[in-house]
Image 1 (cartoon, helix red, strand yellow):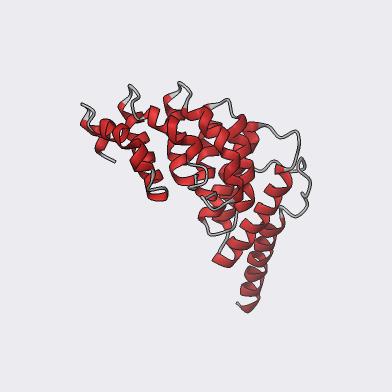
Image 2: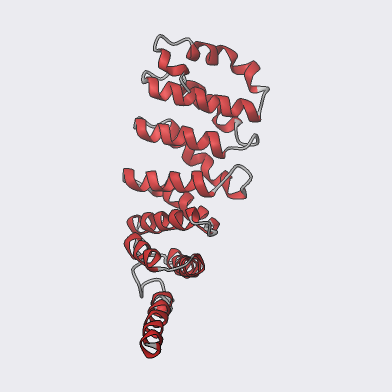
Length: 225
């Protein structure tokens, strides 16, 4: 019986080592295609929190290697960012991905890529990050575009990511969106202005009339923030 238990223990120990080491051989950006499925399957196989944390840490290191590939596509970058978000939700530090989220937000032409990029910016970055300034031009572009989902994404991110220093660069166009024909855009713009007011109270004096008109729109859903 003791021999059987010893053999069984050896099998499980070897299996755990294989799970943790199967990524070790791939250090270059093109040697291993990292996918959300690969990450999820590896996490499911881990038998303890410690084993899971070590597995996720190794996965994040490989993601860092692959981000620096100059030939990386937006599709693959979006996939890597999704994996970073999963790792971040498990308590691992994925802050290095913030600059790549900004890069994807700037270049994305496909809606899914833009959604992933903005979500990563919202979760990984904050107003105190030095890299937040790199999002100003992208936010200006998307807030003024004609694609309503992109406008909503940009307004939400602006409310979260912009510090008092950068709010003047967005204040005017956000106020314009508060008079948009789509009530969802007006609603999100008013919420964004509310976030701006908390950071720069003096904004209320110069934009009070615009905010008041937006709040009294005929569609009452505007004020359901």
